[in-house]
Length: 213
Image (cartoon, rainbow, N blue to C red; front, side, top):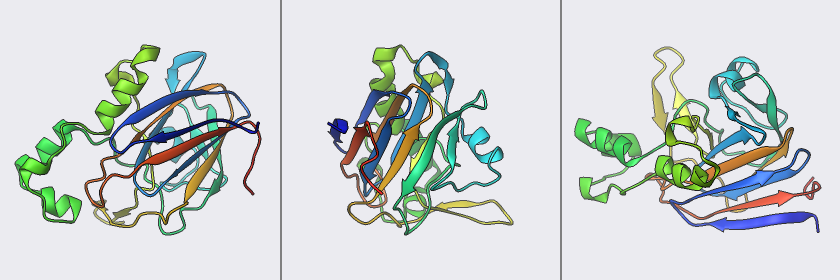
């Protein structure tokens, strides 16, 4: 079988899985997905936002671009990206209960998340907690989880001030990102609670050969 693994991940939960070099990972969804990766043989080597931006000279990456580790090694290549409505994010970190509390304390909940929000709507956990739970069986401490590649999280960035703002742009149903593993990996992601449009389920496939394209 070409599809080795498939998993439907419920909103505001996380999932971790191992991937062999040469396999393909397809992440499909209509909500934000916080994605991270580790070298399976050295879990201290992990995906790095800064290397991925600096080494490729851009803050938005898509088809043909790479996820690069802190050690400057290529971990994954994006071989197909059908999120044509916007771009993925390499600036923000992860949402969490504490992050929501800080925004609420500033009085910025509704402005930040583009809709009227009451403090009692704040979820009791977010992507930080989801990834922490998913990666715990591999002995990865929460503080060792890198800032993620935020799939389907379209942000606007003012080129003069650097101010970042969330948008309501999300993929159409059926959209996916297809990665090729360039080393043996431990990968994990969180189906974000996505305060802006509401959390949705995410589907991940691990394919032993490329089925799409």
